[in-house]
Length: 320
Image 1: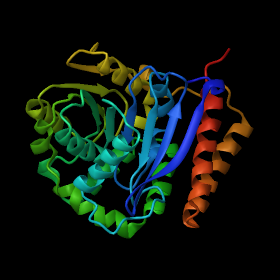
Image 2: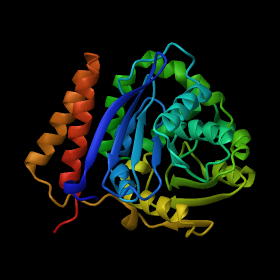
Image 3: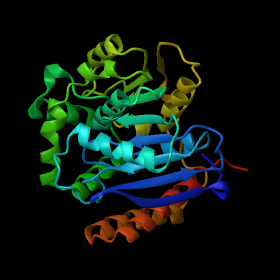
């Protein structure tokens, strides 16, 4: 990961009328590259990209989004459809004047990215990680089973990350957004965009099966498909090193149309500068974020998220 001496983390809230989107901007000084815009899945937030974002920031500035209703951001009162969330992403692109950024969506975030791509034919590259939903299994019960099957392959860290995110989202809003996610037909929409796509999944990603990836590749204008061994649905967190490498090779057009990456090459390694103070600092900053969100203290959330990012980067930066 990037050297903390060149780290710049800014967390701010972007407003589109009365609708809010929280934006975590991460830069390591590599401003010559294209920007990356990261969109998380249902109920979760930019926290899922805590390891992926700094790796991508070594190439260009990263904008990781907490969409309305997620991550403690107030819900808007509007229907939480992919089209509504795409409106917010487009507003961020325009506000920050991002020219041809690389959009990356995870899980339900792939639906949002797909909608943005359909509206903006000028975008040249995008990444869909663990796209959902397979049309043959588009019911809440089946998706719950698939999610559980994938979750048993995840680490305790990711399980705690998910639980905390869903608590911040709230049960009511989660189940308000869920039917829209289940009804969205990503296979029918993926061909509307012009960007070159990279489709990624973990080997044990049951909510995003291989047959769905085959269908998306067949219907997209241009798409590569890769799989990371040993990973499950939260591959963007557990195997962020591999995801970052594949993303960067994709935008360099230096990637085969299809392939598999070994888990050993893709998994996040142990912290190079980790100790008990790092662990306590990470836990304290995350608790501060949750408490601030519960209190609706947006400035507190912003400070806690920035502090958490810096704690992780100090722990994972290269030695020397």
